Length: 146
Image (cartoon, rainbow, N blue to C red):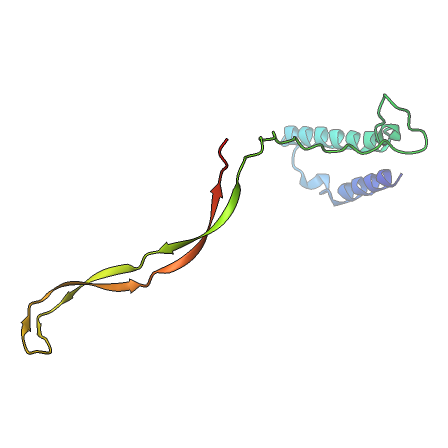
């Protein structure tokens, strides 16, 4: 009922806002435009009327055919995720071991100079420690032999 009332009001507003026929010009000038507007209005009007008069019995929740649910709805479907294939148990275990990371060095040019005794020392490339060495705890998989 509400939809019919809204449709009637929309049609009334459209009719009221149309321009008077005196401004439209000759009868044959816009014939095909008028036909297209009329067909569109007829399709829209029939869709509104058919929608308001449709039987509401198929708007209920579908019921499963194999069981009869009289006083309540059918249970909602349950999502069953696919199972992962089981891998055989690997033999062994993790161990924490201390590993020494050696220091890093960089090469630097040491120019010629006199030492403490006053002797000349030629220039040469020398290694200077860039980062000191350190211990790291590392996880290591220890497999058992069969």
